[in-house]
Image (cartoon, rainbow, N blue to C red; front, side, top):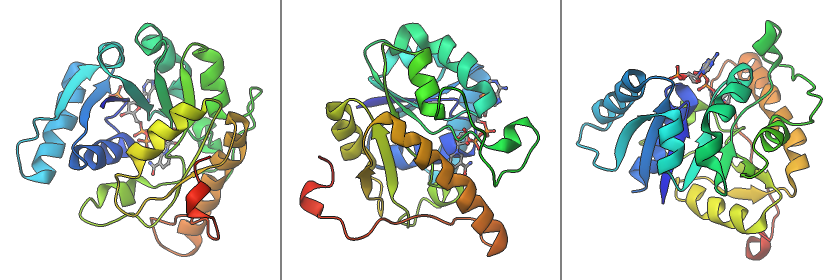
Length: 227
Ligand SMILES: NC(=O)c1ccc[n+]([C@@H]2O[C@H](COP(=O)([O-])OP(=O)(O)OC[C@H]3O[C@@H](n4cnc5c(N)ncnc54)[C@H](OP(=O)(O)O)[C@@H]3O)[C@@H](O)[C@H]2O)c1
């Protein structure tokens, strides 16, 4: 599966890229500039201390066109413009959206969420890209735990989306990351709840003087967790 990390030059994008490169997937780092995307690719090669033939750099629109599937990792303030920039290449494909509508995006607190007129940030993404299958994912996994690439991740990946087949596709991909259990929480509107867990985790990081607070859902029947 060839995937593009749109805005993949920040902490979250880099962390997701490194995990999927390790899993053997073909990864394209996207950015507004080719130079920045290439610098991110070079950084991952340096961290992994090896040649990484399954990793390359492109500008966001080209990355979306070339990929089978995309992951959006930009701040809320950049979400709309970034999605508009990839609209053509995203038609008919899956896009996982990691955007969290933190109040800090408009100068407030990172431990509070903004209430968007569209509902969740992922629902907003679906309105901007109506012909793309949007799945809320990676909102609750910290960049710190993604970047500790020699260790498994102690956090579930809660996902939500309206296309069942796409959720199965992404769940199989995400579960290639050691330690991560994918939990399908239902239709895309459940992203309103998933995204609000992140400011809670950020608050716990502050209170408990740590960096990688995560969440685990227990008691599920493993036979039917994706359906
Ligand atoms: N960091 C975490 O631990 C974490 C955890 C869960 C969810 N998330 C969510 O994941 C998303 C990315 O987080 P991050 O910490 O990686 O963000 P970030 O480092 O602030 O930004 C990621 C990338 O977005 C692009 N970008 C930033 N501002 C932009 C603007 N004004 N216009 C267009 N593009 C812009 C930049 O890419 P280019 O300059 O290369 O184009 C930047 O490298 C956020 O929505 C965040 O809420 C983050």
